[in-house]
Image (tube, rainbow over all chains, first blue to last red; front, side):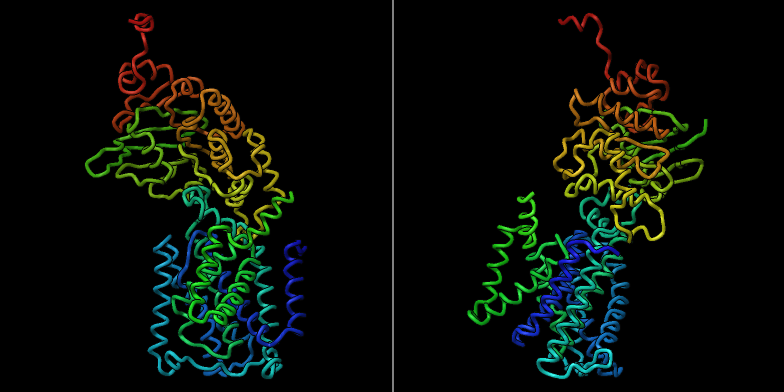
Length: 314
Length: 257
């Protein structure tokens, strides 16, 4: 397989972040891990947006991934992080395969509301589950990776970052190819004109269903990584405001490239961190203003800064 | 000659409104058939029923000797029955080359083709070929929104012709196209059709286009076929003149009052 320029750039960026993690403070390592994990869920939102669907319920899969990690460690005795992530993906894919049969039949506001509804059903179930800590959630057991224990403190944070980075890189490389595959481009075609797609002999139901399930799986990995990094899961992972944040970040970054959600998630996390620090009572307003400015001046997201530059250069 | 399309008693009602009634048409392979009629005469309803866009209320449709009533556009396309639209159905925010690449990928029935890259060398070559044939190669990398109406029509028809169809249904291919462009457009389309040996059924309002490019005409009025036959015979028919084309001007009326 020959790597493309953008793929080499992604690998370069991942290596640079991995090296930087050795020298930057621990809080930044942790923040970066959460940003990468969030970006993975946002990637799922972007996949749906490319097909013309906006999900306000991606928190469902984020939460399933997180809870699978927590429950797998607690009740099945699994401590290997990779196995826990695989468990999360398996559970999420199973749920998405069932829900996808229904939700991919809907478009626009109906899809958005239906996806939100399923996410809120999970939230409601978890809040009522006292055995799972109700609104407080519960802690994730100490995890290992391929038999190696990351320890605690800084060492654990760095291991989590490296794991998140490795997974994110693999997924970004996969999705970079996926977006330019027949299936990936068929999603864009469906967004543009469903009638023509059908008259080309392509099943829009099949395309949207597969895309929905893959997006769910990617979102689940983001949730699993968040659980491993934070060491805790709670029902707010499925709450609609969290899903709203994923949409916010997707709009912030744009759908033009696989790197966009990562850049947007990092900016979002940093802006939020500093906004909370500087204006504890007005941080949501600061985030709102940032989104407003992006929509006004960069309607195709932050990534359009790069493509615009390219366009000017050529 | 082999029958390719046959409709028997094909009807479509919208409540109390009759959009098409008892349409019995047989088209043989290789024919170029025009469909004429005033607005609301049932032409597009007929095309929509044949191409699976609209389910008929009653009647049967056979394509290549096999019943196709109830099949959707996707299955019909795979059987070799395809169409273009009065308003071109394109992917407006995608480059022209991507519009064709997606169509070519869709027409590729190899296993796992959906997960293969869309821009393969073969597909790009095939796309370049059809762009050149339809005289729209200059728009290769443009977004569809940057194309004039005539070029969009040609791209819409080009997409419909990919995937080895046997029969092509064109819904008003020259509507919205300037008088200067319409013959060039039709010459281009007909040359492509001849090269592929396609059977064509096309809806058209422009009688000059009908006379020039078709050999047989189906005249529609109030949802029924009022005349079916060779082009000159149908256009000379009094009922057709009265309900569809209008009476030809006499020497006296041409001279003015």
